[in-house]
Each structure stands twice: as structure tokens, then as C-alpha cells.
Image 1 (cartoon, one colour):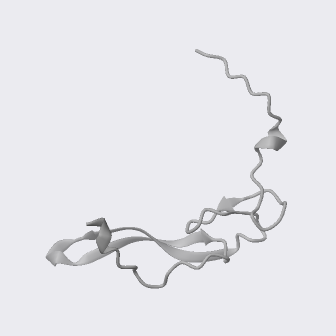
Image 2 (spheres, rainbow, N blue to C red):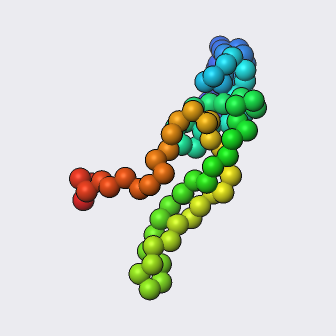
Length: 85
């Protein structure tokens, strides 16, 4: 087993909030910004995946209280992307 050598202090490894210098408590599910406790109080539903279910009905797996930074603006409607086909 190889020994891990890390010369960085623990403080160098702390993720800071995007909005201030506080220690981050989570990451926005929509844009990836790190947020502290003060800025992590917003929640929004997040669609994890979409699939076609029985009777050819589209269904979604949704996370009800995903962390949202409150700064980014997720699109309220699906965005057409015909170029990926």
C-alpha cells in the first residue's frame, strides 16, 4: 500500500461559499456553486432522470428538496435540443 503524502494544511482543503468566505455546507444541485448554511436555505425540486414508463407515458424521478443557491435560474420548461440526436 502506498503512503499518501499531503503537505497542504486542513484549512487549504476547506471549500468556501460562493457568496462569502464562510465554510460551504453544500453544493447547488443546479449550478454547482458551494453555499454556506446562510445561503443554503433555499430548496427546489430537481428532476434526477426521465424515462418512458408503461403505456408510453413519460415519468420522472424527482428530488423534492434539492439544495438551490437561489442565484442561478434553472429553466422552468424543458429546453429543446434536437442537435443531440
